[in-house]
Image (cartoon, protein in one colour):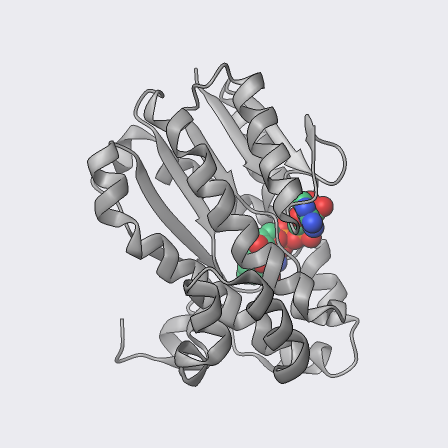
Amino acid sequence: MGTIAISGCATGIGAATRASLEADGHEVIGIDLKDAEVIADLSTPDGRQAAALAVQGRSDGRLDRVVLCAGVGGHIGNNALVASLNYFGVVDLLDALLPALKQGADPSVVVICSNSAQLSLEFADSSLARAMLDHDEAAARRLADDEFAGQAVYMISKNAVGRAVRRRTLEWGDAGVRLNAVAPGPVETPLLQAGLETPGDGDAIRSFKVPVGRFGRPDEIARVIRFLLAPESGFVHGAVWYVDGGADANVRPDRF
Ligand code: NAD
């Protein structure tokens, strides 16, 4: 049985993933603002550094799996926070935990992206996407607050996270650590519920076409994450898997 760090484990997809992995007998080191072994605010550089140190301490510097779920929706009214948590809160923790993962058995990592990462491709070359990929958090926070709507910041943060995963494929492959992303469509969690209750955003979510005709459940995402973490998926690396009831295929059937 392995040692697994999970960010955003208190609710939603992270909590479902935690339950599934604990049922398999793994030891989970949760990282969250509440209800976790490591209490940390991943939206700040200090919080990320403290989280990484605490996880390294609890795991004796040896991690077998990592799942990064912590994130907030574009509806929260704090665009700088969306940029910091959803992008820098992922890549900084990823890179800080790589040394411990190199010591693990069959190490594998899953990062939660979103089907919205590809919904507005004009954002992919935006100033905000560039600031994220250049790892300039101060510029990203300023741009997010001054020049973009909340949902745009969310989409850009998820697009950049997917690219950050793919850009690490060679280095992480050389290090012996598999790294993949799961891109969920709308999933019934507190994050989605809060979006549904936000004027404007709620109507956009309700009118978004999901070909299977319903929202997903957290356990459906957790099962895919569980497979990507397991040796059975040993040849899957650098992938972004859409688990979205067909939403991405419906939006861009000819690009994949
Ligand atoms: P959720 O709100 O249930 O879970 C998010 C978790 O992140 C919570 O446990 C929360 O406490 C934690 N968190 C929030 N701010 C934090 C901070 N500053 N530091 C540390 N932890 C913090 O939402 P969810 O839907 O389960 O979201 C999980 C991931 O899935 C997110 O990255 C989200 O963007 C992504 N996602 C969700 C959906 C969806 O429809 N629910 C769709 C696509 C992608």
